[in-house]
Length: 198
Ligand SMILES: C[S@@+](CC[C@H](N)C(=O)[O-])C[C@H]1O[C@@H](n2cnc3c(N)ncnc32)[C@H](O)[C@@H]1O
Image (cartoon, rainbow, N blue to C red; front, side, top):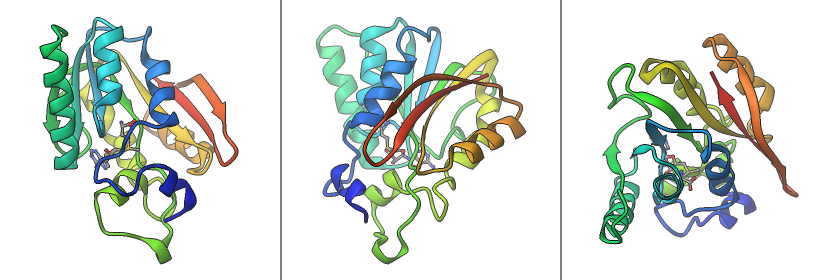
């Protein structure tokens, strides 16, 4: 694992909110309504921000059962406060969902290029690493997400400079998406961008 991974909570089995989570929430709030899916919700923090700060009906999904459990607890706590809460679904990318079912889909994907020497075989590895080039989760996401979008729907994807920005854009274009940069922030070790794809 890299230092970057260490900074991102590798000692837990669920990814905890970091600067990338905050940037995704910042980009999406104020732009979405209707039915919104957050893929790879982790702790459910972004989904919670969407419930609190938009009028969207929020669905959150993750492959990691521990993440689903933590997100469901967060949703239950929101409901106890009298907020709307959000639905949690376990599954791979958008495969659990019907065609044309969301107005927007947001994803902060695992994107670090794999460090083979330090590779771990656990849920934190699943949260952080996107295979050899960092795009092994992003590519199938871009290839399949269009199916679950309603006509006119938008995708919000967080992209790191470590992942290959131009390659991600090329894959989005291959799948028929145009793009807009919603927000971009530079950090000492990477630049993070949230793209709106339509
Ligand atoms: C970088 S973390 C982001 C977590 C959270 N959304 C946030 O911003 O704090 C990536 C998340 O994607 C999930 N994930 C990885 N591969 C996935 C897949 N194929 N389908 C669904 N979720 C996946 C991981 O379990 C992890 O929770």
